[in-house]
Each structure stands twice: as C-alpha cells, then as structure tokens.
Image 1 (cartoon, rainbow, N blue to C red):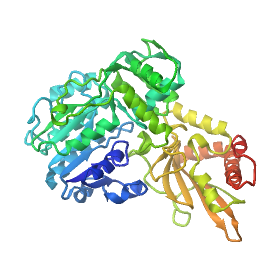
Image 2 (image 1 turned 90 degrees about the horizontal axis):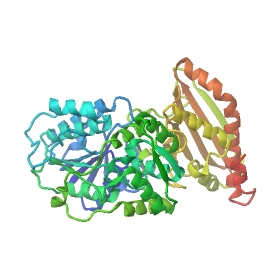
Image 3 (image 1 turned 60 degrees about the horizontal axis):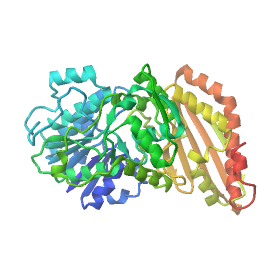
Amino acid sequence: MRCLVTGATGYIGGRLAPRLDEAGHTVRCLTRSAGRLRDVPWAGAVEIVEGDLERPGTLAAAFTDVDVAYFLVHSLGQRDFERRDRAAARNFAQAALAAGVRRIVYLGGPEPPGATPAGAGSADSGSADSGSADSVPADSADTMRGRASAHLRSRAEVARVLLDSGVPTVVLRAAVIIGSGSASFEMLRYLTERLPVMVTPRWVRSRVQPIAVRDVLRYLIAAAELPGELNRGFDIGGADVLTYAEMMQGYARVAGLRRRVIVPLRPLTPALSAYWVGLVTPVPNALARPLVASLIHEAVARDDDITTYVPGAVLGFDESVRLALGKIRDANVETRWSSASGRDAAAEPLPSDPEWSGGDHYVDRRSRVVHAPADALWRVIESVGGEHGWYSFPLAWSVRGWLDRVIGGVGLHRGRRDRHRLRVGEALDWWRVEEIVPGRLLRLRAELKVPGRAWLEMTAAPDPADPHRSVYRQRAVFLPRGLAGHAYWAAVLPFHGIVFSGMARNIAHSAEQTTGTVQDSENFRRR
C-alpha cells in the first residue's frame, strides 16, 4: 500500500517510516520542510512532500493515491496547542476524505477520566457516516474539560475528529512509551539516576501501563492492514501495570543502581512537579507540564481488544528498559523526543549578509589558522555539544542553560542523538541543526528564550598555502526583537568575548591534537 506518514521528523514517525518501507509499503512523508529529512538514512527510500497541516491548500499532493494515512503530529508544549492540533486534525481528515484514503491511523494517549472512549466497543462506532469532522458530544467535552489534563483532552478531541471524518480510522491509545530517546523514558531515566533520594508528588502512586516503543511500532504497522470497515479506538499497553514509583525502582534495578528512597509529599502540586522535572531532567517545563498532568490519572488499558486483530506477546517493563539502555550505551538511538521542532520554531534561515536588510543585527566573527587538515578540524566541529561540551568556559554555558530552564526554556542538556554525527533538524543542547554541509559547514539556530533570533555558524576549509593546515571560521549572529533585544546583546557582549574567542581557540587546538601537534584536548576544554 501507499502510506502517508506525517510527523516523520518526530520520535515515532521517524522510526515508523523506514519500518513501513521494510514491510513492503510505498512510503510518502509530509513535512513542512523537506530539508529536515535530507540526512536521515532512509531518505532515499521514501517520497518526501512539503505541506503544512495548518494550511489546507498545501495538502492535496501529499494525499494523492494514498491508501493509509498516519496522523503522528502534535503541538504539545507550544502556545495554544489544543486549538492548533484540532485544526490540524480537521485539515488532515478533510484532505484524506477528499483524496479517497481508505484508512487513517492515529497514535493518541489514554482517554481522559470520566470520558466515553472515542470509538470504543464496536467496529462501527464512530462509523464513516457518523458526523462531521468537528463534532464532539457536548457532555463528553464538558466532562473532559472539567477533569482531564489539557494534554489528554487534546488527544481525545483529535481522536474524535478523525473517527468522525468519514474515513475509517484506527486510534491507538498508549500511555508511557519506553524507548531510547522518548520524552517519557528520558524523564524516568534522569529522575531515577540523578536523585537517589527524592521527595515526590502524589502522582508517583498512580498506576501506569507502559509500553515498549517496538510494540507501539508493531501495532502501527499492523493497523494499515486491519479490516477496512473498522473505525474505533484501541488501548495498547505492555505486559506490566506499575505505579510510577515502581517504574523508578524498576529502572534502578535494571540499570544496576541502588534502590531509590522515594518520599511522597502531598502539597507538591502538578505545577511544582513540572518545574522540578524541568530542572532535573532534559525535558523542558513546557513539555514536562502536560506530561506530569497526564500522570495524575491512572493510565491502564481498559481492554485488550487489539489482540483480536494483532496477536502476539508484548514486552514487559524490565525488558523494555533493558533494550532502551542498550541502544543508548551503543550510541544507536534512531530518534529522540527533541528531534521534532514545533510550529512555533523560527522557520526563517540565517539571513545572508548581502540580502538581509531592514533592521539591526549583531555579528561576532572569529577565525584561526589550524595546524591540522580540514577533515580533522571538521570532526571536532561535528562533535560539539552533548558530552563533548562547547570548548570554552563551561560554567558560563551551564549557568546560561539553567537560567533558560528557570524561565521555561529548553536549557543546555538536551544533548545529542549521536556522539559524532549530526543531521539537519536535530536538537543539539539549546541549538537546532539548521544546515550541515559535511566537511565544510555547521549552522545552528538557538532555541533559547531570548528577545530575538540567534545562530552560530562554524566552517572548516583547507588552507590553500598548505594542505596540512586548515582555516576555522566561526560566526554568531543575533537579530534583536525590540529594545529588549538590543539590551540583551549589550548585556551578554562582554561574556561573548571570552566564550567565543575561547571556543575558536580550543576547537583549533583539539583538531591539532588529533595530529599530535598539541597536548590533550581535554586540557583546553577545561579552560
């Protein structure tokens, strides 16, 4: 079949697309920017089409001749995400109906407490002619607004929009997904590893049925071939039902850590919990808030109807954690929660000096001759960030990252998917990879909360006078927004002189170290 995958730059979509191809399907990926998928290893095996689910006029080509369409996008953690996801689902549903798509598949979350599960109970519930794409029963909607988190409420609303679209739809409802790089797993991992003794909120006693990401993918692939008349939702979960506290203890056991001391504290509200999660883990507050809010309620599968259509055993919690840790240990993480950039991210590329005009911008330029070949210099450039650090004044980088976390930003510790290789669109600490020309150029766009837009560009070039030397060039660009932007640049300018000059110097030294011309690069990273 021809399968359309939306959200292919995200955590699940980036894993589903190549597996659909391996299963023998023809795969088309819808993305707002084709460049975001340029460097994924499976790019040559799929068709990539540009379009935006918030702009229905851009969708027709993507849905042409499609048999199965996967809705795997969400705006969680962004402004007004409920409205935006509802609009995206409606546009998706209408485009699918107009193109004659035979099946929609949606990966959602647990049903909100007190709500009637969307499409539950029978093959024809929410049938193809059951109503318009924006119909949500008033009583269910009121119940959801009153008791559920915005995250769960939005997922349930999107499910109803798709089930009522006129296209047979399968909704898979999963709670916590355990897999290398998933937001839920990273949250669990960092809380457990960093806090041997922790004061916890009441929600750690809530029961959860976590599921391995490989089981989620197996269900998603199988959903493409379910009976054509099927139009309903299914709960999916792993083999174990645990409290979140038991999950933390289970993680510690599998990871070889001592048993954690967990002390529940009643006054710790969801808002405070999210703030605490945002400080301790790489998951920023904007994403931690809805995740924590959804954990307040129990998330246990209400039935196992999915096994009637997709038989087979699912993994238990311990094995799911063991597999995820193995992927991390082997540096074989396919996708991460931070891979997807939201619709709020700046879409404009770095303004080029000759073409950009119409306002002030600030530039910091550095260059150095490096006594090492350009390929040695490039290896250092491409490995910046994450565990390798930023080659200058680590305290300044850490403090700036913590300040960003305090005000709800992403901070410094998102890390990187791979220790040595980068792809366009990946998160790299507080940056996003905007462009990469292997061996020559790396351009990063800042995702800090700042009054303006910022880029950092690093290049490696051979020295024409000596093939054993190269030239390193570094450029930081800031486009201020209003008076606050100008004041911000003036405030950080003294630190830039230290940070950026040290960064250029130490990157050059590290490249030279690989050819044996200077001492160990670790000495320079600590300067």
